[in-house]
Image (cartoon, rainbow, N blue to C red; front, side):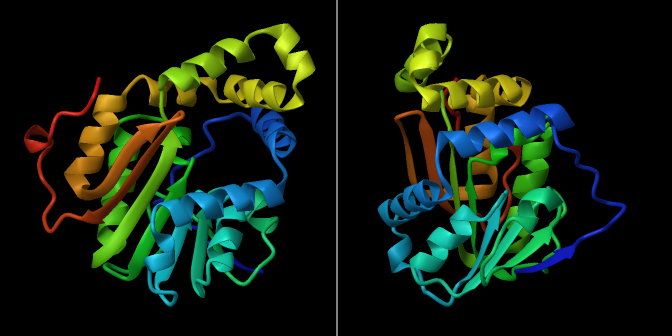
Length: 247
């Protein structure tokens, strides 16, 4: 593993969870699915969204990379120039593979302007402490480092009827005792409740911000997920000119 710390006074982010909540979340995540299952899930998502058509030598960065399952999925798909970014040194240290993993804040990326081809976030944006400010800062940085011909991909939770049903079932104590996977999911939701609820209750704000910085190539909402594949806008539009998102 290659890792380096990015220690800068400009990095101001702290985990939105306290240490105990973070430990609970990480333990629950490992109960929810194994690393192998997560890698398989990520690889399937990427294939579905056309990643197999991207150039294998593209400069690809996964933000909020965690323990690196997304990086392993990208490696399986044949990508050779991979970088992972996460604010947690503990999670970055768990990655074992050929990608370069960096401890850094997504709101202050340690990359040059227009230096990357693909930026990917799989389930990280909803951990940002404060919306919409932190999301706008993250999108601005992503727009800065992405080449004009590049792509950005977000896959995040979304409050669809399916996810509402999952939330309802996960509050049932009997269901949690019967299903360890459901119990793990409920524990994760409880551990990140503030940021999770903050994300799920502002779909219009999130979509408008995304379209302010990026032009959609594919956007879909189903089975509790928002999938947003896009290219950087040539110029960043003001919020007032953005298309209206769902509310």
